[in-house]
Image (cartoon, rainbow, N blue to C red; front, side, top):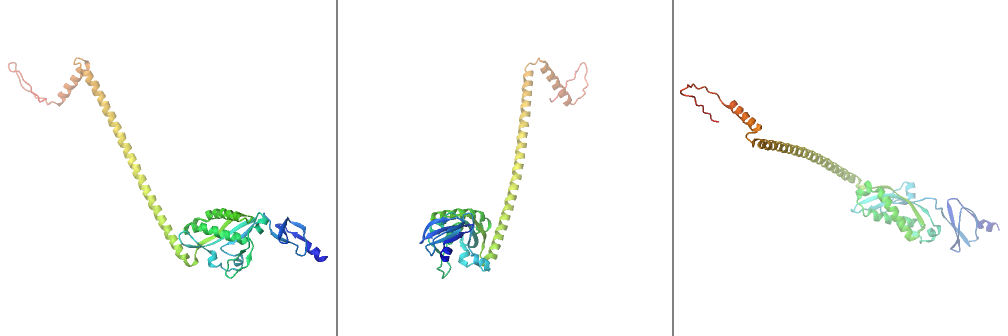
Length: 300
């Protein structure tokens, strides 16, 4: 009786969900609280995390290695970029179990890829394999500089969408909450050379930017001077045209007024011309008499 009672009652903790299996077949779901089941192996309960609880899945390293201070294995942390370079990446996938039954029974057990290890693992490792495949596809389409320098945000967004698509296709019953790219860098053996190449590229870009800025400034000054010269020429041309037009109008008006020799304007103009001639002439005094009057010649 004591053994029967001990095996018939169980408690589902907060943050957990339970699936009751009767001879291996799921028959009902359990929420947090005290529950009763059939004893002696007729029914057993499999526990999973509640949907509101976030679970981490490391990519590129293992939590046990992280706690023990051990470095991940080479193939586990290395990814090949689109320009045939190798980068070391550490990432983390945060997920929640949305459908406990799909999570437990949607896929078969996933084996560990470690050498000489054939131990079946939980469906969590299916998420790991899916995330590694998605990350391999994304990194394979990028250059190493984009991955290391500025690609963290775009990789995180793209990886989250691809992982969610693939786990939905597999029917894992999980929701990918966030993908975090913790670190991305070159191999330790070539890190110094990579930094030197990056510094050289940075200096090259700075020199190019300086040259482009200087060229733009020279071009701007030349365009400004050309614009000023063009405006001055246009202004001078307009002034000359206006002066010529004014003189032409004055000449036309004078010509019209001088058309009549008896007009006051014509008489005044003749007087002005006589005055101008007199001012230009050099006077000469010639003696004369009544019998021989003087004759004056001029070259005008």
